Image 1 (cartoon, rainbow, N blue to C red):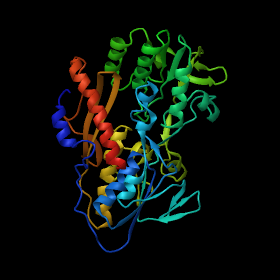
Image 2 (image 1 turned 90 degrees about the vertical axis):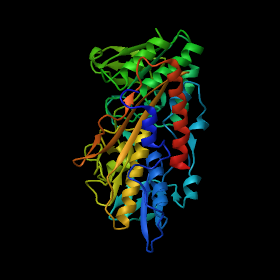
Image 3 (image 1 turned 180 degrees about the vertical axis):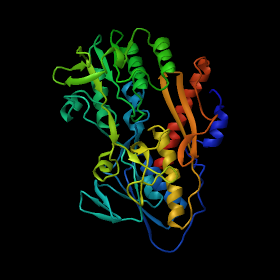
Image 4 (image 1 turned 60 degrees about the vertical axis):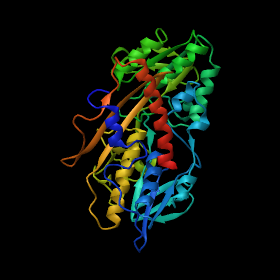
Amino acid sequence: MKDFSRRSFIKIAGGAAAASAVGFPAILNAAGSKKVVVVGGGVGGATAAKYIRMGDSSIDVTLIEPNTEYYTCFMSNEVLGGNREMSSIRVGYNGLRAHGVNVVHDMVTTIDGGKVMTAGGKTFEYDRCVVAPGISFKNNIEGYDEAAMEKMPHAWKAGAQTVNLRKQLTAMKDGDVFVIAPPPNPFRCPPGPYERVCQVAGYFKKHKPKSKVLILDKKDKFSKMGLFTQAFDRHYKGLIEFVPAKDSGGGVVSVDAGANTLKLGNGETVKAGVANVIPAQQAGTVALKNGLAPDGWCPIDGKTFESTLKPNVHVIGDASIASPLPKSGYAANSEAKVCAAAIVDLLNGREPGAPSLVNTCYSVVADGDGISVAMVYDLKDGKLSKVKGSGGLTPKDSSMASRAREQQYAYSWFENIKRDSWG
């Protein structure tokens, strides 16, 4: 990695299992009832619930999540490429229960006035509430409604959509074209669209050598572009075509799911064998409906991740405006630990410490070829900022032995973050 060695980064980050540099106090058993409700059981919500209990075992923590199982977006692209089973990205909630978290499977409808209400008719009081709702989709592509999502799956929320897209890929004829329409910024990643391109191209290379991948992008540039285009040329020459927004009139503007066609901004119509349409994104529905995201995303105080719009409500993960942190699983895990430490302090009458956060985004672009970008963040003049001289990007000229280690780092991180968040 440039500017910052991997060994140094791991020492600071401590791996996925380490707490944020904010630190955690010794386990407390203070008298009195303190209640925290966590909305959403993805990586952010699960991590926050666990670490609040670890920070102060006297705090009553309830996590509300409609699904009894969660499928991670990270590594879901490998399912699409045929290199991983769905069972490997599935996690449950018994690990949180073992930490004393009360897990409730229900859908939250209302967050207001110190109370969380659910579709099942239950009400939960809180002193502090953590909202980790993930993302929902904007209606930015004409014709891409719920019915179209089944025929042209986005697979941007791992689970049934992932299974659907994988089935379509295995059933498509050799020689058909897989069309992927990546979203505009900002968007949840992982699952990364360009890692997905590599995984699907790898599947085609082995099993459908006449098929190709066509990228109809809403953007002209994207993160780790040089490394991804290197992978396209190195591993999948002739299998991948990238069409930037400037060459298509802004990418896909409408779809006809019945005909499996996509219309571009320049008027051109493209026929797909399999279409993977990924809409523009915004904060999860519960945040939108409860006044936490008036402009699509949730403004927060970077020190505690408390909403600037609703007191005693904290928003973490993809839904929060935490730039320059990306909307990634690793970032959500790090934000959750900062938030958890702050809540423990606040509920015990202490001033929260200064936060430090980390992120690494891995992409497996071929067997034996992994790439990553990493960064450390802190609070400067009240705003989240990159720490100068920290982090780095996989060098384009790194050896294949180094790339193979990157792949193994990605797999190790994956196992660690599952245990850290839900274990």
